[in-house]
Image (cartoon, rainbow over all chains, first blue to last red; front, side, top):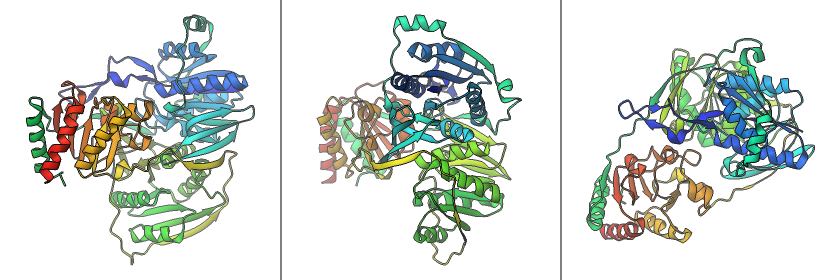
Length: 254
Length: 317
């Protein structure tokens, strides 16, 4: 079985600081990593392979330095990587078009896996968008996956209810963070992964021409937040007395 | 023209209101799409101000993104809306994204604001764990935007309002994916989105049984809704996920939000930043949560909560 995992290199959002004067997030100089939930997708692909056999290809769209990050996924157990070099923060329509072209170029692909959303933008758009471009079934928000030779059965988290669904291949599956705990590769795996191939494809060659974004990001604004920030930290009884008084004045006590 | 779709009726009414707001520069009309919905739902959409309804019936009784996206694609190609608003619940999100893929058009998920200047549509959404707001401008039509619940109030009900209702039966191409069963999620029937008062707990709690302290405070505030941060729901599983407030949990807007033993990671803030009054209780004076709070008490929640409960009871008496 041929499994493709779409993984995105993102800035580590836990390191983002807000510029105190502009209130904007400072995005430069922040460490990059593979988006957490995409690692869950890689882990699930490895478990599928362990059960039914096959080959795992990791696809990523982004800057050429993503190769370093893809190596970590190969160490986990993916077989090969492809980095599609495109401008950083390419818009979803561009990324989905490139991934779809790459999936087609790889030949017969049975399962395409991805995280339900990337931790940087948390849009959740890429998976179902790619399924639409490929015109294949989509099993989103997957919390449990059972792979068989000719079909897959999944549990999906739909908020107030859950659904069990099944699909033959080819299918796109987006996974949640709860589906598994990604393995940490051993030193041996890290060393031996250096012999696994990582190819580099150029976006324009893959797409057969330049791709026009459908959306322009005009700005990343700061988030207005005006809070009173009154913190009581002296005598506890006095603090509580003051707090209750303020809450009464705010009109939130009933 | 603005086209709206959600299989959640309340959300559909909100989309109509939002659409009517944007419609003046987009040709004036808002059309809703319903798929396999009873007459009562159509009537309600009409009474709440929609200009027209595409009342579709299909061979696919239950929501499936693959088939329903194709249905919407055909309607969009026929009627050419400038803007398509889709309710941003789980079904709506996967539908909106797939639809955008099929149409190869732009899509903004979970927009916090949408504006139309002339025919140019701009949407904003929260990014980078709640530290930034991306301003996204569409360069193609239709613009597809998914809208989270409670972005707008439904328009007032008017039983005499008239709308064109166009009924159509379609046979959709079936995809081989199948729903085997639908079951209740592990839920305690809590709807944090609806609560006016929420008392939330985080990693500062030492034992599952200590949640009692939190519910005592909620009761003293005449509320009953308990929220939590990620570790309590996702890792420790002391509370079901319907209590989870945050970027990947629920987003809430209560009048009063009390955060007990929550450090204030940006992912949590993203879920509660729209709250009215925010109170934080944390033993670490440098905890991030104090930056997002109106009032804070630096102290051990095991001491603060019982004393606060007593003080609130005295105040009420």
